[in-house]
Amino acid sequence: MKNSRFYEFSRRFVLRRRFFFSHVPFLAVTLMALAFYPRAWPIRQITINVDGYLFPAKTHQGRVEDVLREWGLRPGREDFLVPQARQVVPSGGSIHLQWAVPVRLMADGKDVSYATTAGTVLQALAEAGVKVGGGDLVFKEGRVISQDEPLGEPPTSSPLVAVRPAGNGEELGPSLRAVPSRPDASVVLSVKRAVPIYVYENGWPIKIMTARETVAESLAEANIRLLPGDFIWPSPETMVMPDSRVFITRAKEVTITVGNDSRVLRTLKENVAELLAGQGVTLGPLDRLNPSPGSPIVNGLRIQIVRVGEAFVTDAETVGYKTVYRPDPALELDTKRVVQEGSGGERRWTTRIVYENGVEVGRGIVREWMEKEPREKIISYGTNVVVRQVDTPEGPMEYWRKMRVLASWYDARQGGRSRDDPNYGLTRMGLQAGRGIIAIDPTVIPFWTKMYVPGYGVGVAADTGGAVKGNIIDLAFDEGEEHTWLIRYMDIYLLGPPPPSTQILWMLPD
Image (tube, rainbow, N blue to C red; front, side, top):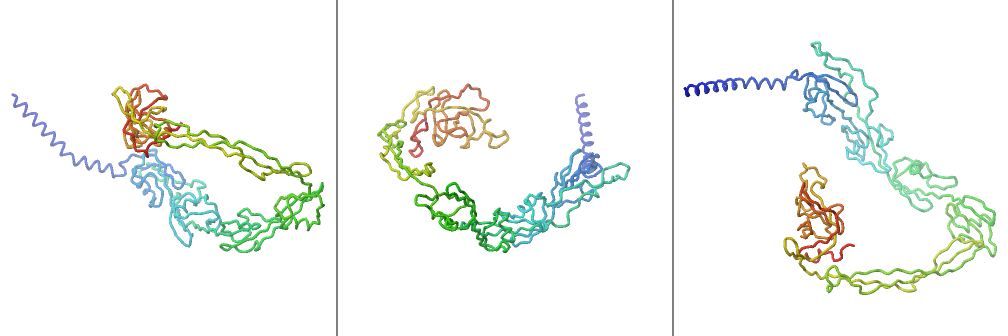
């Protein structure tokens, strides 16, 4: 009886397996047909965006390239297409196609043609590796433009569309016959490089980079105005050549005051004496001239003839002393000794005060000297490293420095990285942040220094932090570890052996 039941079970199992494997080819063909036959995809509503024109559409196609090919749109490698050609556009999704604009660029003696989807002229130039500097001119279709100007023409309105039937009475979507086609005509860009010219205003040279044609245009572009009475050579109509020299002598506006009589004039005279002689102004025996006769004429200069007096006043002030620190191997580390007390000095100076018609108009120092030199303060600091022991719950430990610090805490979550980042929780020295890792300022405590922190235990200096500066340390805890650490000032112990002397900061920051 038992053998009969086992036989019946085996026979049914074999029949089921034969049925399943006999239908495997049929199932495979069915799946391939669903994947590649366009009508296998259900009708979906999508949006097609071609160069800024939006078209709602319905389609049976799945992949982006099949949807576009249905309407005769075949983007190339230069064109911008999102999603990518072999991706499937979902129902309610959109296809963004931007035709690349053909560009003919003439710059630096080269004539190149290429296609680009750059939005602005500046981006198109950068794509071709052309940089535009100050003074360079950019031309588009023969006219000077700003680099921020759009490369192509922006869409002004949506074109008319017509509904295309699916052939079986079912409406698929609009025809794209009115969609902007790939641009045929090239946008012609050219760059005219600026050349240096040198403008000398009253003898002072100014270098100008310009691509303009004439001297007048170049000066106007550089905001250099010519005023009545100014002298310029060569003439403003002269064509600009590289390294051209332009000389401008400015007529200067000067106010002359004699007593209560003032007058304003413009002149090309070189100094005060020539100007006064030309104006017929003479000086009386007690008069003083301000500025002096040989002073050059500058724009806005005020010339006065006044009575001049002077006085000399001597003043004094205390000069502070400097503090000098010197190493002393006889002193223990972190101890200091005043070798010499400092004292201040005294500086004196004499001031000449000028009076015009009894009113002070200026003063200046005519002499300055040190009446008493300051004496510097000298402090010795210890460089003798003494190893001592500290009692800990883990037993006595040798340390070479005890220092006062502000101790805070952190864990891997404060590292500024997401959990899927391969560097999540890694310290500056490449270790995993957790208990026993301490962030330090490496200019104060060297990396890999072992230290004992009361209430925390032994840790190693293997990390840094943006706020960990000077006498501040940051204690790492395991992520999720329960603790009651509070930020506080405390003494810590740097465990032996001491590092090389070149790695020891002999004077800790205050």
